[in-house]
Image (cartoon, rainbow, N blue to C red; front, side):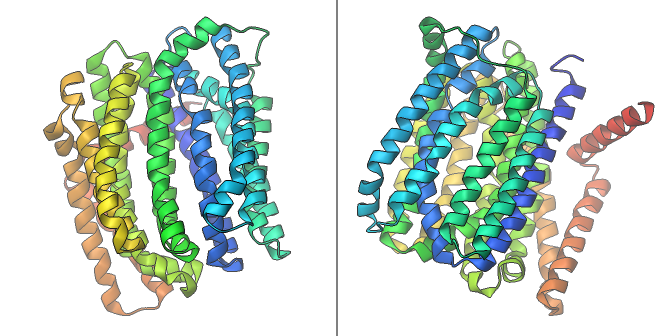
Length: 484
């Protein structure tokens, strides 16, 4: 089967979705159990530590891995050169985190951060071993491999995290869960993926890949620092409790959006890269991605915003009620994100990492201005600055594709408009269920049934293109299985 055929792309996208939502479904359940066992302040501490490790993680996950996927004729020399460079570089990064942990702890006046930072930073080294295998899987559209690796690591980590929390290990249960998950994930990926590093290394090949990759790395590093600076500000200026509510409110909508984005992006980017010389094909793929992601994600986010209070009270207990307004704010903001990412994937796939970097700088300058204006008025105001920034991000990311792909604002808004209108109508009707004054559980069940029914029925009545496209894929897969 041709790597970039519709059938292969669809099959890989489904495997990636199964992997993301299977693993995150388990993680979601575990997080609920742990949230009931642990104090919100413990989550605030881990959120603070994760800010620093996630910034270091960008050096591992971005740049050269993307360059390997984008390069037309990447071979074993390219992959092996990047692998050996990554190992050394990740050890250096770990050393930086190990030595700087006392300084970070002193800034936040929390000496207990030192051992936590040093242990959790081991994820950087493990990721360095895993990264090239990930690039190989993505380049060769072997996303079935991710499913077994990720699910295996997630189940094992779930058992360890819950067991340690019951035994009273507190914050260390979360540390162990993260470490074990990544370690098992990496081991399974190495066992199931055939590629192995060869005794090859080329500094010239590395330089060639770096000429593309450094712009992606710089862009995503800026993005990671910018995204996490809100947590740093809340943790320093306000409290770890505020940070816990902020992160927990973000966690639920981000769980859906990030996994949908991760699945779509990991399949879409290599698919677009294969067509990088055909602007019309890339435009068509981008348009389809915008339609499908907005059609699937927007109703989830609008619906979750309406049901936020019931979700928090039922799943996390009323001690997390302060997370409700954060969840509602993030639901609206994250509904826009997939459209922005589809634009970025197109720019990245056609090799314009220079444009990618420029967009990142522009977005962060504008976003920093909004953050500085809002940060003085409390943690909720910082969340509102995130919402505003999501709108700014779409506006900036969509701009270059008018020239590069002839796919400008008007075309994109027309592609998204059906999802916006249907999601708004669905959310309005779903909200009316609250007027029945049922229990939290019965209200949530009724809202889900009403929301799904209204959305699907509206899609059928108005013959929404994305709904018809999804149905055609389902029928095609059903027919294929029937023939098999």
